[in-house]
Length: 313
Image 1 (tube, rainbow, N blue to C red):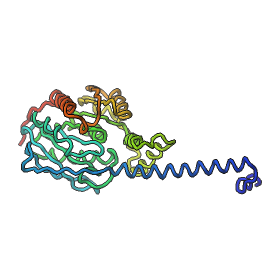
Image 2 (cartoon, rainbow, N blue to C red):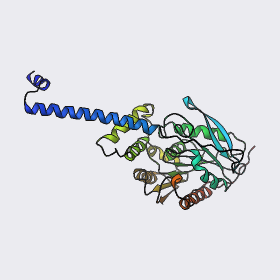
Image 3 (cartoon, helix red, strand yellow):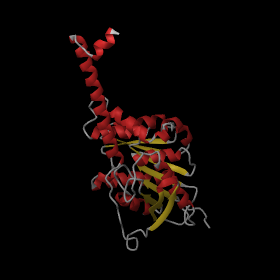
Image 4 (cartoon, rainbow, N blue to C red):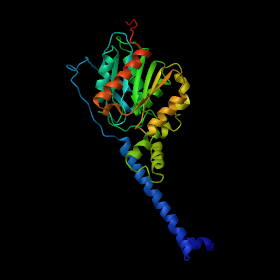
């Protein structure tokens, strides 16, 4: 009883010190959680840049394609750039804080080689409201887009290629693990679990070095996406993409994302390729680097998913 009384009303120097240390730890932890929660809120609501083009006059004769995502996400719109009738479709999945409009030069490079190409914006990006889940919910959006494109009478409904960067790369590989229509995939700066992307973004704010800040942010993100807490990491299902050609693009300046890309490449079954790039993020590359990047992407798809047409109705 005297110990409890001393802790409650400290009179000795060491109990006063102990009480002060406990109070400091408590309020530091509380402040860390509050700051981490604010950071996560800012991270999952990225700055949106909506892209609009005149479909009547834009090169490549694109069509606006509406598709429905199950659940509250509702209707989405993407741009379909037609290639030869009956050839595979390449779907481009943009990265975090990007949009479909920033991929148009890559679209043109692929369409020039007769591929059908489709681009759309994920939730929380472009014109779409909401928050990103760094791949948990976005995979449903990719599947809905594929289902809609597969219903067209001018495509091969059983052959898709998918390219993605960070967020888009996670979505591309996750869909490939469960959808046999994905016949080739390019993964630029891919991560194993969405929490890794949260850690990367916290580090970019400059607060990642504070004790427990990154971990507190990951916990906040996990709480926001609790319904996915049992979703396995990509690495646990890599055997499902055995036989699917995979090109992993590891960028020297991507830090943790570069490391996770190499780790997933090492664990992935054949066929697979790894290419090292000096810089990541296609949309921020200079003109010469973009051209080299596009040539690499086109060459991979030409080799692994050639645009030979199948008979369509």
